[in-house]
Image (cartoon, rainbow, N blue to C red; front, side):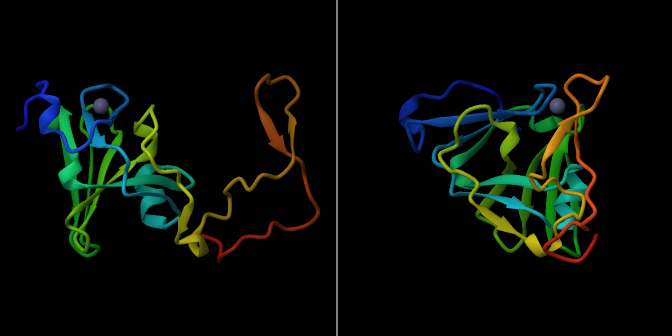
Length: 167
Ligand SMILES: [Zn+2]
């Protein structure tokens, strides 16, 4: 286990780091900025694993990534068929790492773990043809009467246009 300890700046690969953490704070990670790339993943597997419409990741070289605290709190799920490993905080359930056997030198991290800039904007979409049919596509919204802060999609006679087949 790697202990959380301050390291001299001279050992770091870059002068700027971005720190991420799980929701309970048990796991803290760090990458050297900039990340390699950032993208939105619309695949059913990532949607299911993260419990959201789509997952937004940043990718980092493993050599530019560090677990600052809480490595013992990480629980790993290895999917042998897909050759992927997903690590999440065993205390709060936050997805933390997504690793693929085909890309052993990279680690993928949910963008939402970082509160600061990572040096890459998520300008790419992968598996777009598999996006959920219930995803919000920017349709006009109106306030829901009696529920401040709740907006709803206005009913439409036209069926929604989705990029791929319904999932
Ligand atoms: Zn946690």
